[in-house]
Amino acid sequence: MALGATTGGVMRLVLRQGGAQLALGGALGLALGVGLSQLLRGLMFGVKPGDPVVMLGVVAVLGGTGIAACLVPALRASRVDPIGALRAE
Image 1 (cartoon, rainbow, N blue to C red):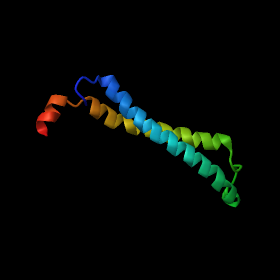
Image 2 (image 1 turned 90 degrees about the vertical axis):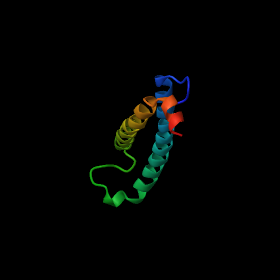
Image 3 (image 1 turned 180 degrees about the vertical axis):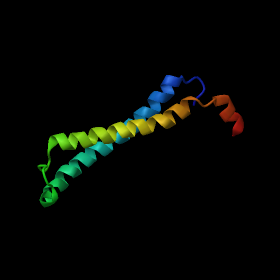
Image 4 (image 1 turned 90 degrees about the horizontal axis):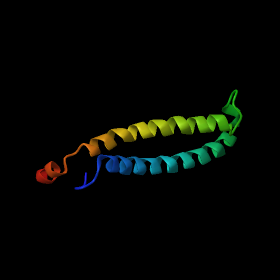
């Protein structure tokens, strides 16, 4: 936590950084998933390769889980006392 930073500002910073990584991972995973689904067509039962509902559902569930995982360090970072942290170093 920087001197003069607000709690909301620190939360936004941490969540924005985590969200950017999640977006990149989601886009790459979606592209690889569509590509690999064509190769694994014989192993899929009841799902068409590249089914948009399944692909977007997976991205939504993993994205929600990732954002929830980013909340823990964001809350911890927003509660740090900057003066106490500077004294400890």
